Image (tube, rainbow, N blue to C red):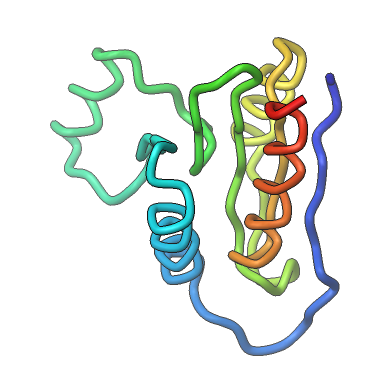
Length: 127
């Protein structure tokens, strides 16, 4: 399972910011899958907070959505319009490493695409 899957609807135009799409996704997942745990990896931090988190093991480029399972769900979350956001080198490296270790690794553009990715992952874990 060493590939990184891309979920892009092809939508181009005005769309919500990444954080709003991610909040929508997380709220839907909480209601639909109450047993799924997602860990938060990014967000604004002060220099001291960032230094402390790095010392505690936080990795630059860690994906936005990580669900521990077998295989893990590792998803870099971007805006619905692919042209309005970019996957960084660090983010791509994290996805590649995750995929190489057997995780379901993907980039999803918008919450609808992230939900499609989650459904594809669910098919794998429910085999």
